[in-house]
Length: 165
Image 1 (cartoon, rainbow, N blue to C red):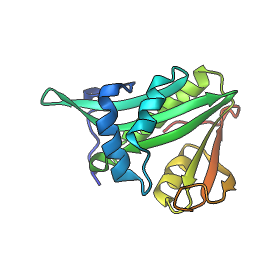
Image 2: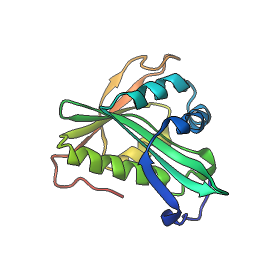
Image 3: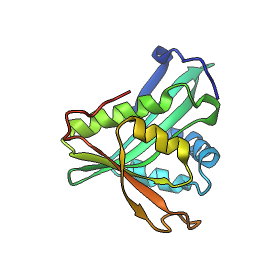
Image 4: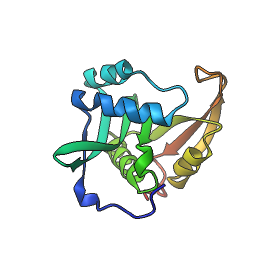
């Protein structure tokens, strides 16, 4: 895990594009025991009602993805489907930047809450979400293809105490 903070001015937060799919799929495969297939991400990009962001940096003229976040608005709920950062740059604040952007997007859409599922075994992710004020609101039994349960976490955007990091 990297310890130095990157120069965020060198990183660009933007909507995900078709050209990003291979890099997204590679980060996904390195990050999750049962990764989404590339085609799932491609389907997300084709739906104009979906929210999808990547964080990249130009390295030798080629963009290198540091991370991504995919979400959807369902009624007044902003639902985060996927968030991950490249293992080579974890701990540098890229996930925080993606999450802060998602919180801003949810607020701008007048969402009342942000909801996500996380593996019960993923303690680092649970700590990360808790740091933003997400709380456990339930469990989904055998939610993941491998049979692991998911913790459902929610961040209320109606509270005055909602914070970004």
